Each structure stands twice: as structure tokens, then as C-alpha cells.
Image 1 (tube, rainbow, N blue to C red):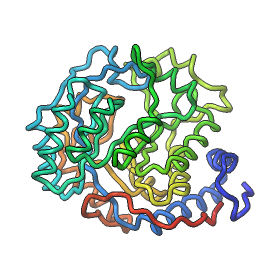
Image 2: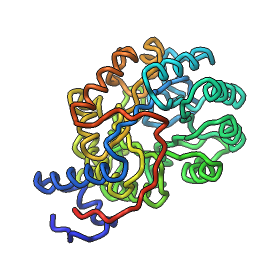
Image 3: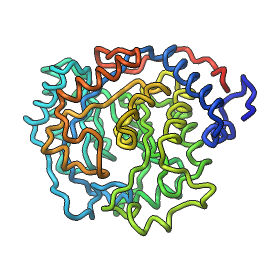
Length: 362
């Protein structure tokens, strides 16, 4: 590829880098993403304890194993005391924040989540991130007032036609995740989002637009992981054929493409917090986490959900580290991080805005 050194990362150049196959060019991309990461967020890796509080969900999303029509799932919803015990374990393991994640579950009521957040904030120094799907402004305001610091809501794809196909609206409602992200920012949340790489129907042009949308919306946290099909979903079975883009345009859900997307996301959003995702580690258990950390990522989200619940939170099958205890996971991750010459961060790990300079590799 023959990009001018100081050319901005516009749509055509992002797409060209996504399609790049020359190893020498990709080494430049990896090096630049890692250098930008070091300059803007440093060598610390933030560990965020993930608590998967409920596998109930009212949505019919075509890509998620927790979708309401999924059969054969042993659904659960954690009690407040169980969630608080996970938060205490996160403290003992040295984590600075927890992520309370679940399906879009009306059983996780406004009052219940607000109470849990208040108790965590009253008894621990943890930052609290919520990832509970599309919720009313009343819920979101109540949780913010209770002390929630951040909210994660993946927009999944910036292509509205594809989004509407894979993420059906609930009766009487219209899903607009970009609008909710903006409202949450106005409420004072740090906002996070993300996309799946290789979702059926995603084209190279769409993925390039997704990456630039992160920049346009100035996202604080950005998750980029590969699409892993679940046999419980339409996109994990024969129905997927109706969604695939033309062979030359369909983005693969592979490790290399995901790492390119992570690196490009770092370049367009230099000071955002970007995780090395569990989905990527599932694709490559030996080196997936490390490769993302070497290509721009600076966050890992180890699971502190009790194992009996964790194995029932089946968004996709074969999830990495599903049977490891939280303590074992902590020790493993610290060793892997130190082997890269990086160190585990302390504290809540919020976004620290830095002066943005154009990337030289582009």
C-alpha cells in the first residue's frame, strides 16, 4: 500500500488498511498503533472485573445466544448479595473497577441496580460500569445518580439497514443506540461502545465507517472483537446465507482482521480505553490477548462471575477461561502482561484525554 505519510485516516485509507495483506506494511501498522498507545495511555493495563449478572433477555438479536427465543438455556439472575461478593473479590484481586453486564432484562429493575451500585460505591473504591442494554432515561439517570461511572452499549454496526436486520425492534419501540449514547454522555457517564468484526452482512466499507464513527462520537471506551456464531441463533445456522455480503465484500471474523480493526481504532482514538476482548482470546487462546495488547489495546476484562453462573452466560460457545477461578485468572493475566514489558494498572482507570497528533504511519 502506498499511503502518503501524513495523509489523514479517512474512509478510503481505513478501508485500504483493513484490506492490507503485505506483512511489512502490517508491521508498520502494528508498530504505530503500539507507539500511539504508549504515548497516550501508557504502559499500564487496566483490569476490569466482569460480573455477568443475568442471562435473561427480552431481545431477539440474531447474533446473541442469550436472545429471548433461545431454547435449552439455564437462565439465571444474580442476587444483590452475590453481586456485592463479586465486587469484594475484585477488590481483593487488585482491580480498580467492575463491569456489571447482563442481557436486556426487565428483572434487573431500576431500584435493584441503583441499590447495588450504591452499596458498591459506599463500601469500595471501585468504579462501576454498567452494560445492561437499551434502558429508559429514567433508569439511566437513577443509576448515574446512584454512582455508576460508565455505561457500555455496543452499536454493533453503523449500517442502519444491517442493524435493523440483525437487531429487531421491540414492539412499539425504535432502537437508536447512538442517541442513547449521546444522552448518557449528557448525564455524565463515560460512554463505551463497540462492534463485531465479521458479522454476516458487514462489508469492508461498513467496518471502515464503524471505526471512523468511534472517532466522530469521541468514545471513551471501545470494544472491537470478532463475531463468533452461536448455534442457538439465526446467524449461527443455515439462515446466515441470507445475510452474507458478496464474497469479495464480506468481512471475515478472523483474528487478523480484528487486530487490524483494533490498531486502526487506536490510531483514530488515541486516548480511548480499548480492551483486548474475550472473543479474541477465544479465537486464539495462546496469544490472542497479548497480540491485541501489542496492537493498541490497554484493557483486559477478567471474569469475576462465579463459575456456576459463568458457564450459563452463553453468548457464544467455547468462551475462553470459562472454568477458571477469578484468582487463577488474575495470576495468569499478570504474568502475561509482565511478559510484554507492561504492568497492571492501579485505580479506576478512567479516560485521560491527551493532545492528539497525526499518526506518522498513515
